[in-house]
Length: 136
Image 1 (cartoon, rainbow, N blue to C red):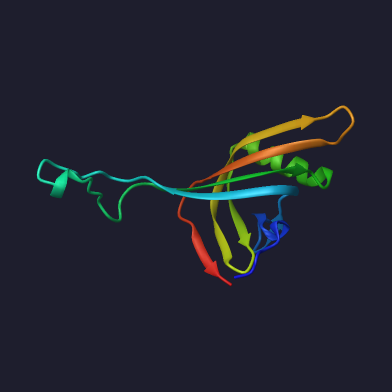
Image 2 (cartoon, one colour):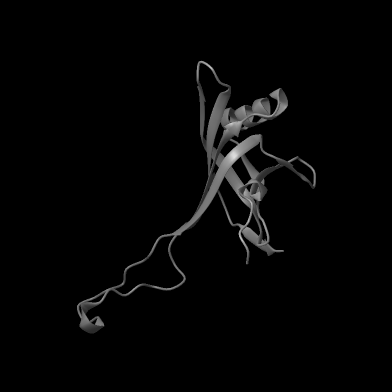
């Protein structure tokens, strides 16, 4: 697979109907998948090597993004979702790979600004249920 454009990695929020809307003016974005392990090592484990129990543990996805809000409406929407503590359906589009879709909660919303620049934001999301992957 050839290199992909970072700008094509999108974080999209459910529009309340059957569609999705791209979240704000993201300049950087990142998604990470993690899984906890369940250690079942015991005194008779071969060579005292750690043994893990397959198919168990908690899985989660974390998303982070930063940028500038593209308009007042997107700023207001994401701020309200954060303050309400809503868990909504999001879609993460990974170019030439597919998309991940499922419930996420905004866990961090930060604003910053430079004297001679625009106001920027950083957001973090955590998965709040089962995620589905759809290949492209």
